[in-house]
Image 1 (cartoon, rainbow, N blue to C red):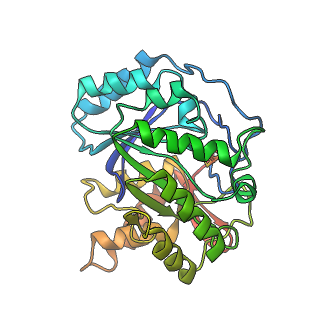
Image 2: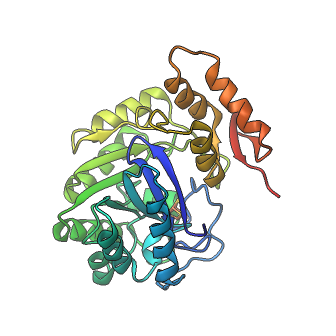
Length: 312
Ligand code: SF4
């Protein structure tokens, strides 16, 4: 399928059927931690990049496949809300099924009323807030000119006022960049003014655009979790990572995730080990079976091995 992938497992959204609405890479930002590569040219114009009928047909097919699906998640090879007409897609999906719909977005277009209104029928919206100051917003997200921190924050606040569904704000914690107490207090203060239902703290566990993007150390992760949990219930990055325990076919589940984006070997092994608590060799055996398919390569970044799709 061209637009639909998965379902992939995560602790945040269970078995999530992904729907990608954009050609790569179409984004208003150029984050230093982006796993899709650099934004060569910003995309600022909202468009119906693909016919909605094609996307809905693929979703329909996936729903008929019999696979367990907990969420249908709109994402993009870039900024999801650049797809003009996402609101209609959400409404059409809700006519097909009772499965809840989530939208992952950077939130950069929320200052536009037409963007906010397209999201009102989603069950959960997951925008990003990685900084609590203009300086760090520019340094981390490297947005297109004019996409200031104050515009971003005001857009998120306004959306919260209008949206009654679940607003789960995602904070990417980067070692040495936004993990100081001062930066975290700024983020907490910005979050407080938005009033999200939950904060999802995430860390850069995948190879990034910039080689010097670092994982924060354990002490900083715990400190960030403690500060941000004062604002809203928090999903912890380590405890909230990949969950394979409910996958009917492990090899297929792991393959689907890794074909989509590189996965840290450590994360993969720990998710597999959780499936076989009494069989210590089984996780490594599953990895070997995966490698034997010839569809993956092992790469290294920052001293960490990652599994990734083998280029043709
Ligand atoms: S908003 Fe998402 S897709 Fe866009 S540059 Fe940042 S991480 Fe990449």
